[in-house]
Length: 77
Image 1 (cartoon, rainbow, N blue to C red):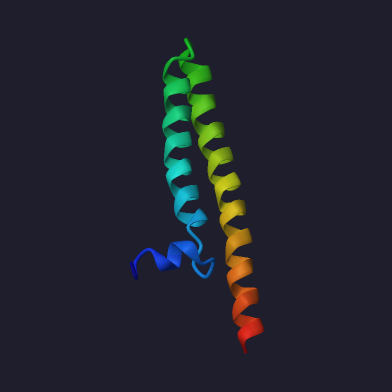
Image 2 (tube, one colour):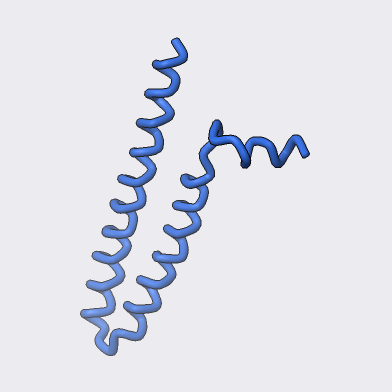
């Protein structure tokens, strides 16, 4: 029951872990889209630009949660 309590309270955030999982799924989707694009040049462009876009998006989402954690620490002080 003790392990379940942090999930029921909002003291710990599980969303950054979910974002990491979503990043790997999106990266897999980008690679598959690049492979099945039909053209080698477009495939490479899709893989490079898609991987970069997915990474930037996920980093921005994680930064929001890091900012929230930092603000909570400042509030506690």
